[in-house]
Amino acid sequence: MGPLLSLQPPPERREAIGRAGLGSLLAIAAEGGPPSPIALRTITAIRDHLIRLPIPLDSLAPLTPEQLAAAVPESEWRQRILRGMTVLALLEDEPGEEVLARLEATARALAIDDAPVQAFRHVLEHQFNLVRLDIVRRGFQRGAAAAYLRDEGPAGALQIARSILKREDPALARRYRGLAALPHGSLGRAYLAFIDANGFSVPGELGGPPPPVVRHDCCHVLGGYGTSASEECGVLGFQAGFGRNDPFFTILFALAQFQLGIGSTPVTAAETGQADPEVIFRGLEHGLGVTRDLISNWDPWDDFPLPLEEVRRKYGIRPRQAV
Image (tube, rainbow, N blue to C red; front, side):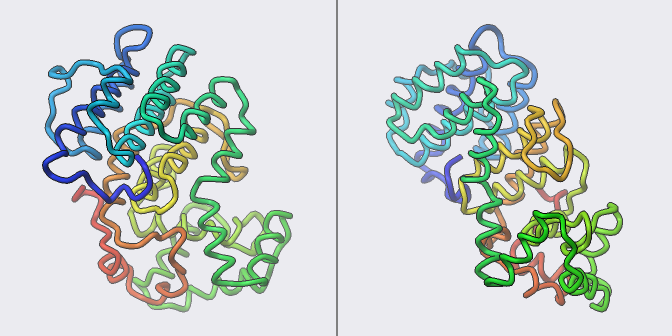
């Protein structure tokens, strides 16, 4: 799962790369014993929503790192496979040192950047501040903040600072509350309804999020995602599908917050065991068809006045049930 997930292997290579990827996932799942139920669910979800080929898992054998390197010489697909293997390892209830050793051997054999493996090491060694740093440095928050500062300039920096310091910003809050004057059915009204229905605050209000988070909240609205732990994982998968940052670290945000109990945001308490791989990778497939990066290359104020359904059509956002 390297950057630009919308890119797919050429038709003549799809099945070979898909089989190699699934065989490598099975190798991670089989470290230390038979594959666990969540490992099999994860591999199935990756096959169905990312590889999208009807390859029976029982027709595959686990691949060694060297076999994977021989089967997949292309760097782009090597990166994706290593990221998928690492996500699988993170979803396991009790990943061990043997899994880390397999991931490290794979990165060496493939001769690619091992940043996902280093993140896994940080999790395994309980270096949780380093995990959070990995997410901030490489995840979607950085892109959202950079886009907001690009759009709003120095005033945007002050708004973010006030939010971090938990200070009210009445002028900013009035701007968001002013969305109530937009027509029914508009994206702006739908965003405000989402905020109020869930008991949230808008930026500028006490307890409100930093303004860049509005992009994430708009993804909930545009994609049709709720706010339970499972739905948050789904919308983060959705963002990973269309994002231009490394999607591994967007999924790591979800796993740190809802599966591993590490906590990747100060807004809500961390949870454990809530991530459903089917929901994550179905969300990822949903995001693959989106034609714009709604986190780092979009200003929601440009589209707040437009009808919600028009904005969805504008950016190729399908109904969830169509995925």
